[in-house]
Length: 126
Image (tube, rainbow, N blue to C red; front, side):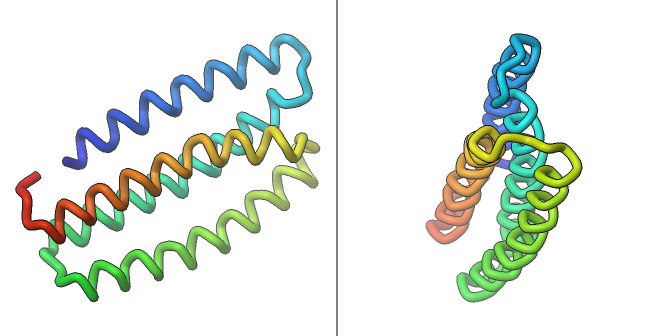
């Protein structure tokens, strides 16, 4: 299950990275923002998938898995705040590009996390 989730996420990252590089080479303002957002979204998506995987490996009950999800979301919220400030102040990136890059990767990571947790709850093998 973990390998499938990482492969799906890797494909998404490759597509967003390619679009970001293409836009940046074309001089479009969205390019740098897309790449900064991509990295932030990748970190957040990997922690979401990692939390679901850890809950599966430890065979946590539903309440334990939900505790992992909530703690992970809190940590990702702090990381996103710091990363966005860094991207906007140091990188001088476009806000829409940052949001697009972050959202394109992180939202898929959240979907994969829910998918993994649903399989954990239903008792299906990985």
